[in-house]
Length: 379
Ligand SMILES: Cc1ncc(COP(=O)(O)O)c(C=O)c1O
Image (cartoon, rainbow, N blue to C red):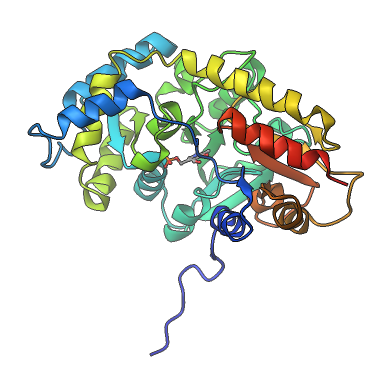
């Protein structure tokens, strides 16, 4: 039988490749973005108790109602936006499913979706599967949005602009000025939808996160995507949520209904209860300490650390140390120095190489200390 792949260019992701290489070489894995420390005992205690309760059958399609209500309260507290828990909120199988469902539901064949590079890898495939066209626009060299390039790249055929703030892989966060520029853009293109990937919304440092929810002018057209995986150190649970105005949400639910129908029940009940005791505002302080600790440790390493305003990723330049490609450099770091990282070129569709690599510092202090010690020898 002859079969032509619909996605011939898609191979194994860099995260899997680097994690496998790390395992083969017994390297410390600072590549993939997941924490290696324990989950909050208050959460595991809730789960242990709930497992004996009647929580094992399908949850409602849009999500467990008490969880939706608590998320509406959280959104009010965090961003002073009132959302309707029944019509504007959806629990998803991680942020990934929310993004996929929203693109499938809202983007038609032949339309364009603007993506800002470098970017996380789950945006392009759902666009291609709609027979729509991804339009890649590079961020500035300091990874701020390039508003001139964005204004030039958006047309009346652009259905959606995907933004990610705080930004993976670079740790940049958007400023009020960036949001002013975004508001000006949507005035010119009133049918443009903004998909705002805010999975690191509670991991910002010196400056508080600005959400699309902080900007009433953007509410009608915006879809925000959140992840409990990032906010509660439970990436393996794959539970997240989407907020969108009702007319967009109705469409997103049509896809969600046939993609997963509903998200696993016990995690929703557990998170609903956990939201009563956890303070999301402590997350930024927690990771700020980790960031500062890691940056201090890396002082004796010849890599040059770039500023990190949010997320749990630290980008470093090896310019001046080696002329290797960033992929070769990260492979050598893994094999010869025993520390696995991610080459930033993997976040560009054309593999643009700025001699930058990404560390994940969501690791316990012992792991970070040992990694930094190994990297001191770097030449
Ligand atoms: C920017 C960004 N968006 C989305 C996701 C996916 O989140 P989830 O695991 O909740 O699907 C990630 C995970 O690393 C991410 O970094």
